[in-house]
Image 1 (cartoon, rainbow, N blue to C red):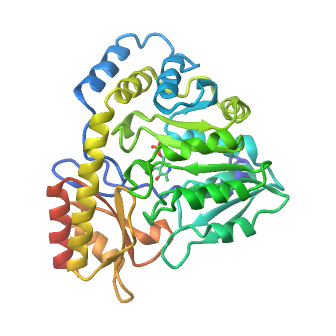
Image 2 (spheres, rainbow, N blue to C red):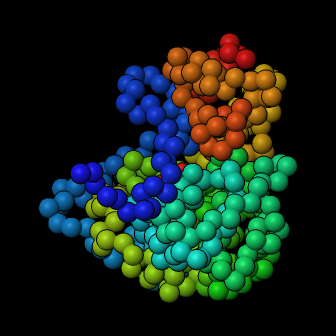
Amino acid sequence: MSLEFADRIRRIPVYPAADGYALGGDVALLASNESPFPPLPGVVEAARQAIAGAQRYPDPGNVVLRGALSDRYGVPASHIAIGNGSCDVLLAAGEALLEPGAELVYSWPSFSVYPQLAAMSGATEITVALDSNDRHDLDAMLKEITVATRLVIVCNPNNPTSTGCGLGEIAAFVEAVPSSVAVVLDEAYCEYSTLDDPDASIALLQRHPNLMLLRTFSKVYGLAGLRVGFGLCGSEELRIAVDQVRQPFFANVAAQAAAVEALRHQDEVTRRVELTIAARLALVEGLDELGLTTADSEANFVWVNLGEDADEATIVKGLRERDVLVRAGTALGRERYLRITCGTPEDNARLLAGLRELI
Ligand SMILES: Cc1ncc(COP(=O)(O)O)c(C=O)c1O
């Protein structure tokens, strides 16, 4: 007899994870929007010291980390949800808010985890097309909100298209969403945006108890491998609901300690952001010279239009043979596109040299 699984197992899409993790050697890893910069020595040391006490469970209240985040972002610690990566907080928000009969609104193409939220909960998902510049069409999203809507997600800057919306547009959008509907503003890449001060959206939390800003240590803080993310919530109620649906220990000792230490090095974060923005500009220029157009990037990656006649799969394979990993647009919701992370100058040069041979 075969096992009988819950119905949602048939619904949940398989996450299109990047491959190549097992590749050894000198490979340009430009497929997962990670930081090319390793954690600072002080951060590694903090994690090492924490591991020395790993016979104990981690603090389930994440008190030190929540306190450090509260100091850094000016949000009460009771409004801050920690997670095993920001995906963990996102999925918990879905579990806390959604159920059959409820509706979830988000744009597409966007982050590949969003479809899981509806599939897991049995809620109905409404996807809204991006505009002609691959940006969120916030007015069109507003039109999809009904009495059944429980959650709206806006990814800003958007993964995979890299485009951003300005704070004015976002503020007007959140204002227009009924206060009974939760809004998750996924800001995994906000520090790379030149549109606004990345901290400016935090002020919105004071006016909107239904808002959560989703942030992560995986990108600018360079700790993707340790898995720490957080949600800055407009209300304690929202944070409590997100914590309630999860097991108590979702951030391990090394992750908590490393994150606290990472927050102490904001000057280095700024320096790394500046280097990434410079790499982005150089990459866009190099792609432009090859005749390839890119969406206006506000993130640490670019979204490249390969053109109508391009053979996306052959290009991705050809790059891989040249030890360059990028993401095929097809896996992310749009054919004949590539999503390319801004890497080190050497990685970017290798990518451009490979593309020059392949297109
Ligand atoms: C838009 C967006 N949100 C959230 C995440 C999740 O980040 P993490 O779970 O590593 O914090 C990612 C990761 O790539 C992302 O692209």
